[in-house]
Amino acid sequence: MLATPVKEILKDERNRVAGVVVRDKEGKSIKVDARAVIVATGGYANDKEMIIKYSGFDLEVNLFPAGNVNKTGDGIKMAWAVGAAPEGMGVLQLTGGSPVGQGIKQGEHLAAASSQPYLWINQEGVRFCDESIAYNFPFAGNAVSRQKGGYVFRVFDENTKRYMVEKGIDVALGIFVPAATKLVKLDAEIKEALKKGNKNVFVAHSLEELAGKMGLNPGVLKSTVDEYNKLCEKKHDDLYAKDPKFLQPVKTTKFYAFRCYPSFLGTLGGIKINHRTEVLNREDEVIPGLYAVGLDAAGMYGDSYDLIVPGSTLGFAVNSGRIAGENALRYMGK
Image (cartoon, rainbow, N blue to C red):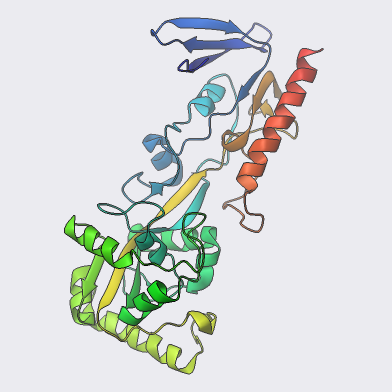
């Protein structure tokens, strides 16, 4: 039944699920009897109040959802309303992020350039990590989110830009821009972002000018860049032991910087379940007939998404749905 959202989960006098209340296209509430209900609404990635309450981020201000629309935690809230225990709230599938605002879209070459493991600095103007964590986007997302202001800068020069355009990028931007893609649109996208007044893209003819545009202390930026260039010259990262192949010096005008806020692919918790995907209350007792799956269910992750098994949220969605369906059928057959 399309365009017929569920508004409430119902229980009977024995505390078992009895159905749902839905609202049809005309706005009329309809009671639907059901012995089993499976909550599969995809989490709460687009619910500003839930995000700030449980993660501390301000949605669309210092955290940006990627590939998520209309995920407002409806199923989680309805399950809580009938006694489901919350679990894993605030756990996000964070990524290292990219510049946001005018002239930038997910999958464009500018965003791909910002994901490369070259020179990353924080709001203080200093390095803070081995930038090759770009390969493991949850690591990158965690590192970025913990910096002052919740953002970082990705800095490179004209030579590195030419490398990305002519040789191709080292790190893929997910499935959107594969590794080794030549960023032939990068110049045009940078110009377009500047033309539209994007406040997260900076271009300058000197490091001093770049620092001014970024709001950094010019002396600190120069010191950071000088130190980084020495590491590049000797092909050894004394600070973080980054793979030497990613040590790209910052020497040749023009100079570029992108301010990057973390983005995320989804929320990773909400409703406590058992191994049968049955929803549990705060006493770890099963709520008969109620199941939760996918990003509405908690328990798959600790504090971070695990990229050792890429696609695990997809795999969990498929298999938790299968497990819930099988167990709901068994339950209804009693």
